[in-house]
Length: 469
Image (cartoon, rainbow, N blue to C red):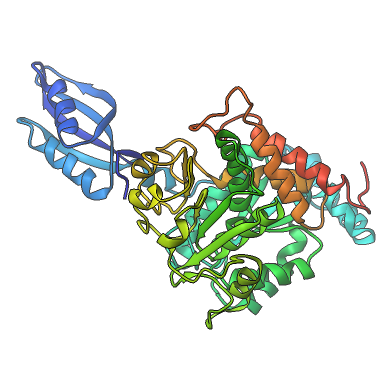
């Protein structure tokens, strides 16, 4: 639940009020007295006796939106006609579409774009399938694949409910990197079926973006697809998050004048995101890390370790700490949370080392209140847009795939992830760097291009077998 009014809970109330007098100011006062924020007020029809007005305002959640409507309705003379949820209106009919890139105005153009002319192109690709990258959408198209088992913070809600999120992902690919992406929502959570389905549709795509697939299934799906396919496979919940966290932490440590090699890092969350963040932090030089899940610290002495947790135990927590998360954050320089809301308090942050860095990334409710954390931490980051330093995967995945596609890469390597994180961190200049600006805005014009260039260079340019036009 949002703690302050948010545009994601924006409503437009169409109503009538008596003409003249203080009607308009009474409407604004009603919204504000209910705790909402008026963002627009439009008179859509005016008469001698009545005004029809659209009042657009932001609320905290759906219950709060209804309270605002009730407050408006209580104003003397107000008649409510319609209440529209602006987020739902945006989604009516879906958010993406397919458009032709070539004109089809006459028979000649139809004969080249489709039969009989298209047969010549098909035969050229049959002789050399690598030409599909040059002559089809393959070179600029990504499949956004989910099984609906771990959608945002909503859990296992199924493929249909995942579709709006995957549409949004596709829209972001287009907006920030010019990539044509398409949602593929699978009605199965069987690893073999997921892998086989993606394998047989892969010829039509230049890359696979796995999205919102629960752990530990996501690890197996990604591993097997990477072995089977000759196009890059990228699990954004893992590697996109890891890139953004490393980039932000690189700059946060510059702010507090500490190094990743010497700081003590405590992590909450050992799922898909936590596992990937940990691996990239270790690759970047982190040496002293303790990871906690809902049972406490992960250590070699635990008897419930699966393959993923065993790897964590073998590569972290050298001192064998076996306590809970609160104990693990004591004396830590950095806290990174990719877990659950409200598991720490401001008092816990007060026990950390001097000038601590706190990344509370659970969404929409962080592991610790950002306001409480800021009382004790030198730098605070969240996954939310209403606080400074938002860690948002859109900072990474468009540029990563732009670089992968441009290089005709066949795989995603750890070196590419490190390069992407370094490029993202460098978008923030030394003059801009500060406690409230360690990561650039998702709308910063240099983000996608910088990340793409770093990935492209790390990938070594063009893949073999590609034929130039």
